Length: 423
Image 1 (cartoon, rainbow, N blue to C red):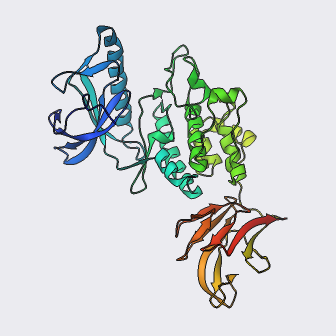
Image 2 (cartoon, one colour):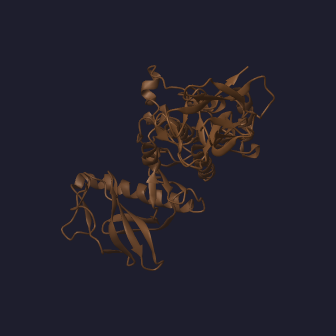
């Protein structure tokens, strides 16, 4: 619910060409509208600087004025920061995963900038809709896109300082967009420079809690790691201050994720920034999402010394298996070779579960594979009745990571299977 007395009315025109359609959102520092650009003939998003408690809307319904003279200096500083954000974003327009800024201007006693209009949902909402975290492949694809965008942002001498699921939009066609650079700063800081303490608990590292905290690319690494953890588990990392007092988080390997992913996230979440993975390019490499040439030379030695490299598939004494469970029948185990899909189906006459190669197999239900490089089990539902884990139906035709020992039911409560490892 928004206060309609402060918002611009529909059909008002800004800068002679942007026609306000409706309000998109109201925040503590500004109001965002959907507008129509008459020159470009497209919808756009217009962000208006409107810091609550500092300014008010005048009687004409358009102009903005400070609530008292002692707020004028604060408002002028807000204008500078607002236009600085617009300039930062516009300089990053070539980066596909960063929201584009088309225009910015001053009018009605305040400032505006015009952005591409994104039809989608925040990453936070997407995770909440999922209930217990996003599929592993979706997480990794999202991280790859965000990570490569952040590498370029850092190359432009900026760091975001506010990476979180609230500031990442996933569009209807699967694009990932990083938004809200209002807290961004340049990487070349003066030793005595004070940085504002604006942060999101659970996504901000310890150095952001201090005016004199030394911040840099590793600050964004921490926040990105927190965001990955949230995507995978639907849970937040404890606040950085609480972590200094001993509050711990559950390791990703305890959720069934690959050990190298869990260990990499741990290194990215080190409380002391000097012990943390220092750059996003190194972070991506550790997750298997970047090439060697993207790693700065001074980070390669650090990578070798402290962080697990992405393991290549190697012959191992450990064997994977599929364990078939059916009511009234003995358990049966089948070997699961590395990197080779095995089809699970049924015998038409008795509906018994069988695996690929059985001469009586008729109906193919799903395919199971062990990805040796990613060290993970995946299942692909190919049935009409569906696969279920804890009563929740898995998406049809989409690979989903499953955990060893987790029971997967085949459309009923009478038959299912598990995957596991043995030496």
